[in-house]
Image (spheres, rainbow, N blue to C red):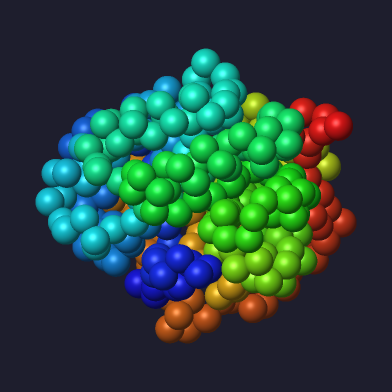
Length: 316
């Protein structure tokens, strides 16, 4: 598995990252032995980056991931763990007091002395000035205490990143985690990459399948995408199926093609899913992507290119 540098952190993370939200039973029950086997297999295949949050499954994802990593019994410096703060089952709370308590709770669930990355989770749901003036300074203190090595911010709208990074002291945010903005249907993140590089900020992308849009089964009922986008993605998936190909594999490979994005997080909850995603990455590095199929799918999706959906509160 290819390892990529993450900004200026010195961390080297696997191109395929392990999204641990499914371990919180977010998409159905995952028996503990199945979860342990999936994480163990990921480690064996060179996946070294694991992402979770207290929000996923109402803290269950963190607890299960902690158990899986402990059960795998590998050295702490052989894997990278990111968790988050500010978003919880009970709602959003980005206050200094809450995020300071949050890291201790997360470390206890993960059975770790420190996390490699601590993100503010979905910051568009609070006034961004609170993130700048209160949350990031609190996270800096957590970093100084050694409980988190690096600090990140996450969310859907891309303008949140420039807003915060232009207002915090240089070097106080190490990483951003963007989702649904680097895939076949939406590459809006690419326009932001030179800016992020100039700030020395590492880039992680999540949801290469656009939260289910780029799959044979299609998105869940609650998916917030406009109907026009859902319909186009359905057409693209059907086109791939007619050709005996998988839109999921194509989408995963496409998301791995930009080396300025250090890791692509994909949710996994079984050995089979781990093998499928790692195989897609391996095939990409040995024989490349199916260029003809990619062109056809891009043509189907071109009328909805970069079409997104609203997320968060109205900022002042």
